[in-house]
Amino acid sequence: MKAHPSETPDNDSPSPLVEVRQIRKYFPVAGGWFKPKLYVRAVDGVSLTLRRGEVFGLAGESGCGKSTLGRCILRLIEPTCGQVLFEGRDLGSLPPEELRRMRRQMQIIFQDPFASLNPRMRVREILQEPFAVHGETEGMEEKTTELLEAVGLPRDSLGRYPHEFSGGQRQRIAVARALALKPRFVVADEPVAALDVSVQAQILNLLLDLQQQFGMTYLLTSHSVPVLRHVATRIGVMYLGKLVEVGPAEEVVTSPLHPYTQNLIQSVPVLPGPVLSGEATGGRVKGNGQAASAIPIAELPSPTSPPTGCRFHPRCPLAVEQCRVEEPELREIKPEHFASCHLA
Ligand code: SF4
Figure: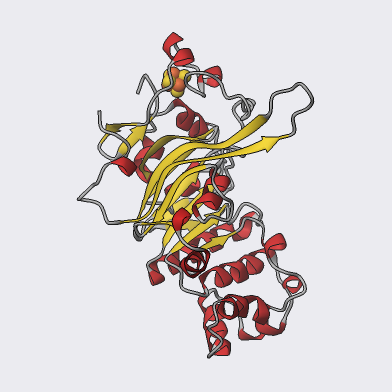
């Protein structure tokens, strides 16, 4: 049995940019007198390697831990334990000043551009803020104009406030801000989930164009596996704080190995007529980037007390006795394709 790629060097793959080693993030929840303290196990032992220049898609239902994992990798929240290595350096052991310098290489695009942009700042101030924070005040006006052009917004946007823009335009501003310092790594946390369906594909295509232009590495989260298929190199699927499947994007979608992934894909409704659900057109997304959103397959068990054995067993149609008592490991079933299921 071969271990997960994060634990084994792979000489054929591009060198890793980010290595996540056994990250856990537990959030304490209010207990009471005579009650044991409870923890939400948002991320519960995830290991992952992100290769330079790839788009890694992270899928799963709301509450599976994908957004928390993204924030832990960027150290926007402190993991309970585990390591994150960026270009081989352990972010947890860096002095604050060095971590601050390293942060310019790692940016995030949030889900909701309505909440992530300061409504009291004009676009010029929003885009110049990252340069100012890192003391790069020279030539800021030209740099911000270039950024606007890169994300397809007119120059006169600089003097306007976020509320004067549509949702898609605001997300373009958020993308421009994230890319201002030319980061090497970007976490895009459900970047189109809060947008109107008519502009979702535009934003996904913009992200892809910029990624190819600047050679960045993306961790892109979404609850929709089919959408990730068309933008990601590889896809990882999370369930209750754990990775249950990782593999090449096309293979994960067409030949999923884990019953949860199969369920996620099957729960996407097929819409009749010309409405497209992330249909690929030469590597780009056409039409509605998320027209087919995943339908919850059943209630998610509580992350404070996950089921024993395989966490998916209460919802799994294939569960056998072994699944209730023994936790399956994430193991390589096909080349580069990993799954944690006793029956895979
Ligand atoms: Fe289902 Fe068992 Fe596989 Fe878990 S280990 S996904 S319960 S078959």
